[in-house]
Image (cartoon, rainbow, N blue to C red; front, side, top):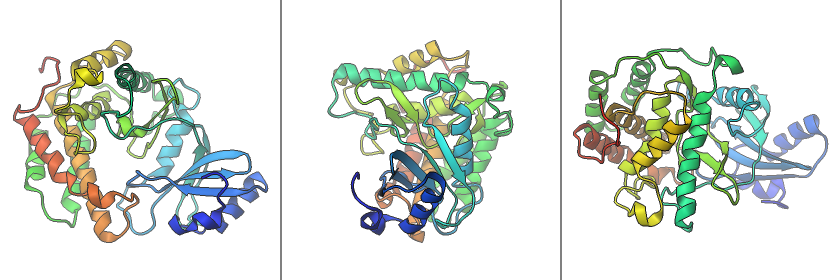
Length: 354
């Protein structure tokens, strides 16, 4: 949105652009301001902000009531700042502002990277070789993240180590139960299945992104290389197989289910098989246990509960994304995919299950 001033953009903002202009001028000096809201984010409103010679991204909490522990942009900023000196591809953290004033909620600024974001896992418009490279680059970037020692970057207290899946099942089940929306029977069934099939805790702890998928990655403008891992709201200390299970979801969901690839001709498209993708991750990762059916079911369950939350925000009028209403019904679709995986109807992961 270069060249458009803040007043022209103000119709699509949830804050006063003059307040942001004053804030930036106080900290960085005078400069022309341009603001553009970025579509796609369903949780924390996100904006491109150009101020003087700086090209930035602003992330803020949404206006209105929020669930306890949700929209934790302070945690997003902390992990970006901690990972900055590592080889994990993240945007540079610029500043965090905890006071609700002047924008109405806390917010932070990070550098704006120039690259490509792909929300459709079929990667339309790309050549087969580049599609393959994109998927393998996604696996490599995740391996880099999981190789970082939380203690080494000051994140040893970023979450509670151990029993990650047990605590996450409890958290997301509680969020599901607290939803004021209509019950989804399939999702309740999955919520009961998960704790009964919980693998033994192997004690492995890494920085877990929490929502690691193609749409949250920024790729180099011309190379199949991840230059920025985005949207760290759900990050914590956790188990690397939670993130890897998220990466497996496209092979188990259809194109009209948030852009999955189930049913497509992956060989013709150049998209690696799920087994190839997993092998590439394991070839670059620190030693990690095999991905099991449990991890996929957990990923589908958690994503379904996220869609439940989106539906709740649509009803409350506080959904951040412009396409939130279209996404809300996907909760039941993902719950059904989880049931298929529980019952062995989906394409399996390509690794032996203990």
